[in-house]
Length: 298
Image 1: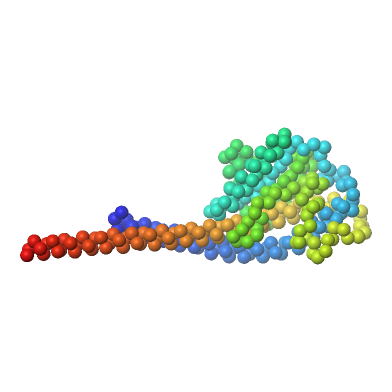
Image 2: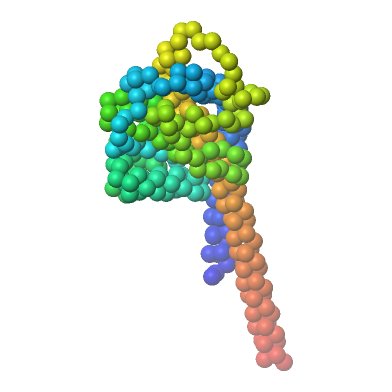
């Protein structure tokens, strides 16, 4: 490779490195804000989930209200896949798509029909490409989701459940652990009798001690309270998943861009070494030509 070509390639790689470093810095700044939003939501989300569990236990048999009624058979299952609008975040999107399709295959193997829902353009396009076009897609907000977005998604899923279009609702998303670590989580939202919440005693919700078994007098009756709490529980659960997914996306993108910057640095070093070797070879050739010319004159 000629020196000019090597120089051009070095310049090109340096430009790419500048872009990846800038993207890493932007992701890091947004990640700090996302972490703050998660920390602010957790106490409220934990309280809603805890109260819903307690009210369900106090009510005994869950009342036969449309949103609380467990369908006699599970013929159709709704899977909500939480992905991003953008890529360049390593395996962030692909692992949710793989987990969602794997879950769908499991349900279909048990004789259930699967209906997909997705947030993020990546999820919508990937499912469509795989001939599993989502029933409904929600896009354009994944880097900064609002509670209104969660409410819109919850309304669609709740309506599908109440109308009998689906008999079960599950959500799959990337749970945020740290900027370097995310995990795929699969939770059941509806029916309430099988919801993840009924068996969830995580530290974010117990607030010290197991409140699920506290002696509480309810007014109005727990059935009425439960009717009011369940829609809030679905909305807050989806909102929490959106925030966790956003933080996971930014952490994955920050890590991916840092890796890309490091790789660019390695390529620049290799190309610089190659250019220096080529330059030394040219200088050596010139010296040999001068020496040969001198010998010819002598």
